[in-house]
Amino acid sequence: MKVERLTPIEYRDLILPQGYSVSKESLWLFTDEENTFRREVRAFLDKEIAPMTHQFEKNNVYPRKALKLIAKRGYVSYPFPKEWGGLNEGNGVTKDLIVSEELAAVSPVTSTARVANMLCGIPICRFGTDYLKEKYLRPILSGEKIGAIVITEPQVGSDTARMQTTAVRSGDYYLLNGEKRFITNCGEAEVNTTFAITDKSAHPHKGMSCFVVEKEMEGFEVVEHYELLGMKGARNGLMRFNNIRVPKENLVGRENEGFRILLDELDIERTVIAGEAIGHARRAYEIALEYSLLRVQFHQPISNFEAVSFKLAEMNTKIEAARLLALRAARLIDAGKPASKESAQAKLFATNMSVEVCNEALQVLGGIGYTTKFPVEQYYRDARMMKIAGGTTEILTYLIAREIISDANKKRREIKTSA
Ligand SMILES: Cc1cc2nc3c(=O)[nH]c(=O)nc-3n(C[C@H](O)[C@H](O)[C@H](O)COP(=O)(O)OP(=O)(O)OC[C@H]3O[C@@H](n4cnc5c(N)ncnc54)[C@H](O)[C@@H]3O)c2cc1C
Image (cartoon, rainbow, N blue to C red; front, side, top):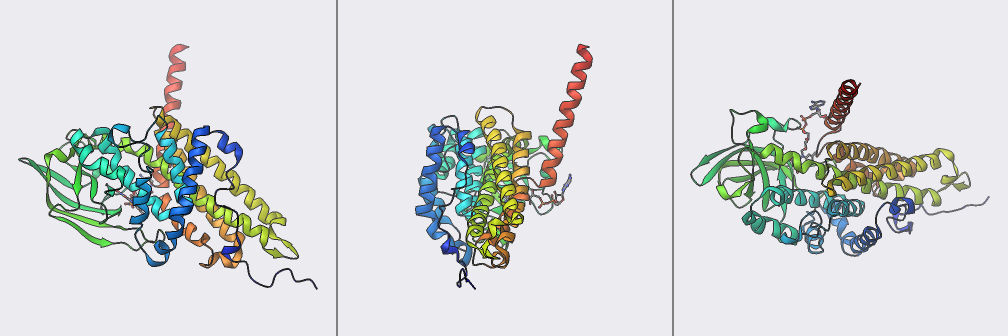
C-alpha cells in the first residue's frame, strides 16, 4: 500500500507568501498607485514586523517596538494632512484601509493598537487647535508618542451619550472625574483623547466635550488590565480619573461639542476595523487553502473533496465582498461624503464574515487547527473582538435599519408630493 506522507504537515511547510489570494479583480478596483502601496506595505511588514510577532502572542509583549516602526514608516499618517506630519493625498482612508488589512493579516494585536493610536489623532486633527496638533498629533504620527481613544465606561458602553465621566471648569482647568474601561493601549498611551460630560443638565448629545488627557497628569490611574480571549500582547484596561486638572487648552473643539466629534470619528473607525477583519479572515483562509492542498486523506488532497473546496469557495467570496464594501466606505469618506450607513455595513459584514471564515478555516485543518501549531486558532480568537469594539453587531444593524427605513419614508413622501 502506498503511504503518501509519514510526517504531519507543519506550519513551516506552507510556502506561499501572505496575500497571494487577493484576486487581480479585487486589486483592479484600487488605483495602480494604491496597489504599489499595498505591495510596499506588505514587503515592509513581512521583513520588519512578522519576525517579532511570536513574542506578542507567546509572551504577552506589548507591540510598542512594532508600533514605532510602523509610525516611522508613515503608516499612521495617511488620513492626516501634510501640514501636521500626515501623508494624505486625497485617498488617505483608502490607504489606511490597505494598511489595516495588511497589518491585521500579519499581526492582529499590532493592528488594533495602531488603529486606536490613529483614532486618538482624528478628533485632534479635525477639531483641535494648532497648539494641540503641534503638541499631540505630530508626535503620534511620527511614532514618538502612542495614543488611545477613551469613550467606554463601566456603566455605559453602546449608549455612549449617557456617559458619566464629568469635566467641570475651574479657572484655567477642567477637573476630570470618572472611569473608562476596555481602552486599547490603556496605560501605554501617553496621549488619551477622552470624552466627558461638561453639562449634566443638557440633552446628552449637547453636554459632552472632548479633551486630551496625558498619562502623566496627576490623578491618572490605571486600575486594572484585562486578560482577553485573543489579542495577546494588547494592553486593555480600566482607567480612573481622580480630579485630574486638565488645562483648558486641552479642550478639543468647543465645549459641549463632544458628541458631534465622537460621531465624526466613527465612520473612519468602522471602515478601518472592517479592513482589519478582512486581514484576519484572509490570513486564516490562506493557511486553510494551502493546508488543503498538502493534506492527504483517502489518497487525495482534501481540497479534492467538495465539502472542503466549497468551504474555500465561500470563504474567498465573502472576503472579496467585504473588501468591496470597505472600499466603498473608504472612497466615500475620502470624497468628503456621508458614509455612516456604508461604514456600518462594511464593519457589520466584514466582522461577521471574519469570525465565520476563521471558524471554517479551523475546520479545514481538522484537529491540528484546534492546536497552537497553526495560528488559525489565534486568528479565530482575535477576529472575535471586532464584533464588539467600535460598535457592536447589534448596534450597527440597528443603525443601518434606521437609515434605510428613514430613507424609504422620505422617498415615499417625495413621490406623494410630486404626484
Ligand atoms: C478588545 C476591546 C477593545 C476595545 N477598545 C476600546 C477603546 O479603545 N476605546 C473605547 O472607548 N472602547 C473600547 N472598547 C469598548 C467597546 O467599544 C464596547 O465594548 C462596545 O461599544 C459595547 O459596549 P459594552 O461592552 O458596554 O456592551 P453593552 O453596551 O452593555 O452591550 C451588551 C450587549 O447588549 C447589546 N445592546 C446594547 N444596546 C442595544 C440596543 N439598543 N439594541 C440591541 N442590542 C443592544 C450589545 O450589542 C451587546 O450585545 C473595546 C472593547 C473591546 C472588547
